[in-house]
Image (cartoon, rainbow, N blue to C red; front, side, top):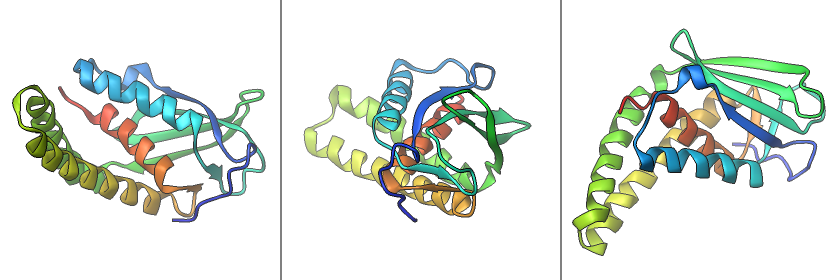
Length: 163
């Protein structure tokens, strides 16, 4: 995964989830989604290939069961590029991730700290795996670093959550 330099012209300054693509979720999921967007805007490396300089805005959603990443210039909203990615490579990871997340949310209410830590390690491992798949799928399209890929994977999970 290539990590572009932290350059204000190579980053996201706005991230929006397409409201038509997302359903209602548990408060924990909504909270993670808000944190992921906040963290993503605060610190990211994001540079669409052949796009010139940003900063950029991202609208993320689902179109015909595909992930849609609509990138525009933040300054004037002009179109930069829209990438559509099949969700198929993410499906097993997302299924496992949701199961572990449910266990984690249950555990934080009643389990011991060591049990919570063990479940959280599994959750983080799946999150890293999803981020790696995303980075690989975007490698010829958009340069991102690992932290950006992790936060974007959180949003993919939020879009895929069936509740």
